Structures are given as C-alpha cells and as structure tokens.
Image 1 (cartoon, rainbow, N blue to C red):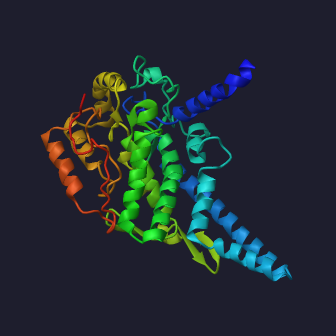
Image 2 (image 1 turned 180 degrees about the vertical axis):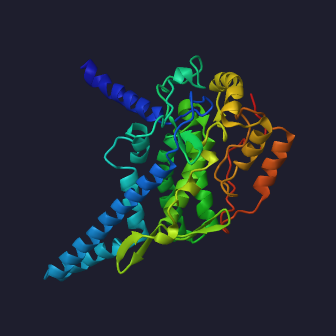
Image 3 (image 1 turned 90 degrees about the vertical axis):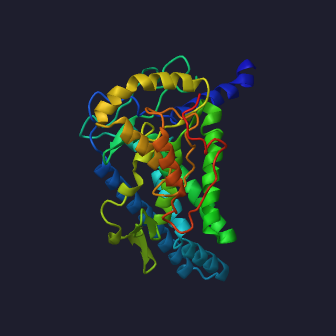
Length: 379
C-alpha cells in the first residue's frame, strides 16, 4: 500500500531529475585540451536526417496516391488524395524533420543523444565534467542538477550539447506557434513577438528559473535559431543580410534536398550565442553566489584557453544580446554572472545593438522580462 501510494511520486521525481539533468551546461570550465571540431560531422548528420525525412514523406505520398488509384469507393479516394496532398505541405515535411531529429528512437532529442553518446573516431570530442567540478560547484547547486550537458565544438564554437535539443525541439515548437499565428493574423511581426514571449515565459518557468534558478540566454538563442532552421527548410530567409536558399524543394510532387542551399548550411545556426560563457545566463539566488565566486576563479584560464581579453568579452556580450540583429529574448545583464562586468562602453554598445533595425523586415519583436532593460551584473 505504501509503494502504491508513493511510488508515483518517486517515479515523477526520477523523471524530473532526468529531465532537469539535460537542462544546464558549463562553458566557463575549460577542457584539459582543445576539443576536435565536429562541425563537418554535424552537417553530415543533418543532411542524413533530411534525406531520411524526405524519403519518408515521399513514400507516404506514393502510398496514399496508390490507394486512391486502386479503390473503387469515392469517399476513400477523396480521403487518400487529401492525405497525399498533405504530404506536399511545408507543415508535413517540417514535422517529418522534427520526428527524425528529435524523436529518433531515443529518450532525449536524437541530435543531442547523437553527439553525447555517439562514437567518433577523432578525440577528444566532448568535455563532460561532474557538476561538483563545474561552475555550479557544490554548496549552492540545485539538488536536481545531478549531471550537466557536455561541451562540444562545432565550427570552433564551444557550447553545450543541450543546445541541439533546443534548436531542433524547442525550435519546432516555435515554428508551430509562428505558423499558427501567421494563419490567424498574417502579422509576421506579431508571430515573432509571440514565439519570443513563449521562450521568455518558459525560461522564467519550468524550463529555467522555477526549476534550477537559471535563465539561459544560450537556450533562448538556440530556440530562435531553431525557428529559423525550420522556416529555412522550405523557404528562403535572410540572415545577417544574406539570402539563405531553402534546404528542401518540391519538384514533381517529390521533396528533395536543394543543392542551392550549399554544403555547409548549418554553420549559420551554430553561433557564439550558444556558449554560456560568451553569452552568460541570469541566475537566481543563492546559485548566483556560487557561480559568481567560481567564475572569478575560472576567468584567467578561460581567457588564456580562448586567447581573449576582457575588452573583447565586453564587446561580445553586447553583440550577443541579439541574434543577427534580431530580438530573441535575451534577459539583459541584471543578475547575469559574467567573466567581465559590462562596463560603460558595453552598456552603450548593448543599447546601440538593440536600437539597430532587424535584418528581417518583420522581426521587430520586443518582449522582455522585467529586468531586461537593466545592464548591470547584479547581486
């Protein structure tokens, strides 16, 4: 009777712990030696995933068309033709890509599991410290933070593998909300505002502050990059002033990969925004106390490892408050713990960055949490 009464609670706690374990990462702690660059392998894995998704959707289209041709019942024919037509929509191919990259037969996001547990010939390909040895330390670390996502290197960018989950999974959630708003209102600016507000609410809630006292600007940037990825699957988009051709095209009722997208189309989505050292997070109390103390100790080694300077990091922090000039829900610098305090020039640079027009015409999305206008590392 006791087991039956409390067993469900135990299961929930265990599942919650597993879920939260994948939420946070640490790029303040540097690996013993540089990690191998897996950017090319990542591009290849995404191409393989797109090919799988395309193959599935094309096969489904043929199956429905065959059933429609063979049936003698008009209502079945109509139903099968509708299903076949649905396979030719942007929504169908985006869902298929989501299924392959996220629900690839693993408990967590497939792309995240691929880099975390996959076998790679070149080593070291990840840095996986225990939480007690990380920036989160021991005294103030949330009890559910039992493991953290490892650091990996794609195209010279060091970031946590959890960001792939945000890109492909939360990015798809953004995509669904965005496209639904476009259907309802046709207002692209409103659609961008809606998805950013969704992310802010999640980071202030059970995806962040409410669970482990972290509002991750890196997570927010990955979510937004994911939205752009899913939009770019089937339509051209503008990023940093350059037109990005769609990754997939529909020809003769068949989806296929688009050669015009180039051979390195994922590079634009892996940016310094994903590093939680370069684009640091906002922390709640008391975790902020422990993180601040540890960051201060780790900063000299980090600067030496990456060959950077305090001046460069102040400038970078300001630049990363927007994603290629677009608002993505950065927290602002209040209660952010960084290697350098954003001095007066960084404060001015951040304000100037936010004042710039967005590179996408309708991306003037401005929702922020309550502290976003304050530009100071706060206690």
